[in-house]
Image (cartoon, rainbow, N blue to C red):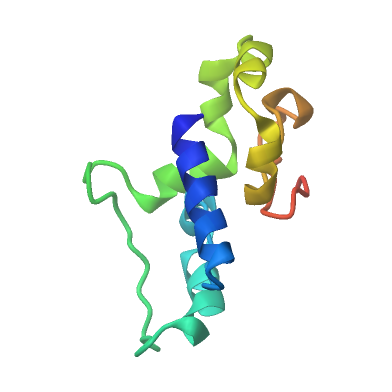
Length: 123
């Protein structure tokens, strides 16, 4: 919760100062690097036309982009949280997460392949 609170506080300060900003969710970057880049490229100074996807982790070279796409795209991370959803939900102020397109864990289908986009739509 503390990390999220810092993001929300930072976003609020930017908004108060009239500074345009956008948060990029890690899972969206992993699932569609090129598509996400194309949406932000017009806002970048000296944006590169020859975008190249990052194919492996910068921290653990044994992890490939396909590994991350499978883990996040098929929501395999949920397995480690099975049975803990209600407990986790109770510890998080989900109203703050909504602005990033997230809902309580217990509110989203745990069926692999279903995920929520930044608008809160389950796909």
